[in-house]
Amino acid sequence: MKLKNRVSVFFLMFFFLNANAQTSQRIMPLEEVLQLALENHAQLKLSVANVKIANQQTKVAELQQLPTITAGASSFYVGNIKLMDENFSKVESFEMPHFGNTYGIQASEVLYKGGLVKKSIEISQLREQISELDLERDQQNIKFLVLSNYLDIQKAINQREVYLHNRKLAQQRLDNVQKMYQQGMVTRNEVIRGELMIKNLDQAILVIENNRLAHNYQLTTAIGLSPDVLIVPDENTGEIGALNNLQYYFDLAHTNHPVIKSAKTSIAMAEKNVEITKSERMPTVAAVGGYNMNRPLTNSLPAKDLYASTWQAGISISYNIDNLFKTGTKEKLSKMQAAQATNAMLLQQQNLDILVNTSFLKFQEAMKQAEISKESEKLANENYRIIEAKYLNQQALQADMLDATNAKLEAELQYANAEINVLYQYSNLLRATGTL
Image (cartoon, rainbow, N blue to C red; front, side, top):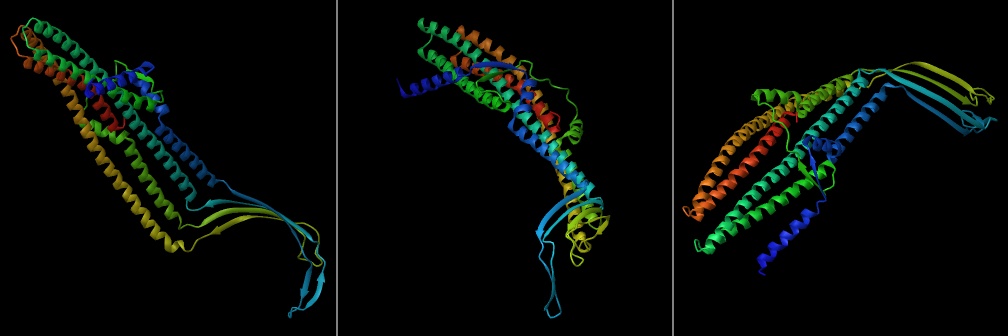
């Protein structure tokens, strides 16, 4: 056996063994696939975790509204008191109760700080919204990724059916040519050409099957299924909505796309930071209170082994004088950051408009191509039937028959791909508007 033939046999054996490794087939509608992706995709699990973390950070920020309470206790040894004159000469000493301890509890609550606590909580809530919008954006991307693999599998199935049908016709034609060759009506060259055509179709089918397995592995991994499951798309895959004008999709994107929503939230955060910076100019007013119990009493001679119990409550006011000089510079920076956030949103909107416009044109193009491909398929099939009839009556050359066969195969493949491409481009348009 020649080396080339051995290699071909090896790859064919590998393909069939790999195909048989698929233990089960499962017909799955697109809605089920998308739902499994939202539940099981690793990226979305990370995004969900980020949302939970942001939510918990908001709860932590809200703790600033609660009073601060501290409690303490201590025990210590007290030495004897020694009295000394101005020359540090010992005058007298007194015995002291040697065991001492203290107990205390202090509480304070910020009453006013220029709205800093409230604005800090609002900043945290805005961060929480951004994490939710990031999750929404990731969901859109994952849904489109999964949908692309799903449609690629459907495309591979359609292409395989086209090639198998054309292989069946090629085999029938080869059988007829072999009969004609046996009758001396054609040369051996005609038979060889027919055999080569079948080999080329077999190679194309092999490539398509491997492509399908590759897309199947990606899809099952994304939705949390075993790669041994061979997914078969539902025949009723998706629905195409009515095509609206371009401005409709622009408005839809500006209203719904997570990127625009996130940019608007970033602007709100930047503006809130400006307010927080301004609040540094204000004093801090807090309610304070406490209770202390100390032993022994050392403010009398001799000292008494008794507890002194005291409590206090009041208002404290503090102000960082250096804020008079520092806050202006900080405020200028925060205003610059707010302006930058606004410009970033405008840039995001421009980029999104470009994406929507491109997706809109591609969707229109896909629909037009589907119409053209359908007509081309009809013409190619009609041409094939005419040439085949002439060829069988020896009124056309083998080259004419091959041209007609290739044209028919190409037209059928284009039509099969065009139908899938319409749904793909429509889904891409929905993703561009943030409504997939």
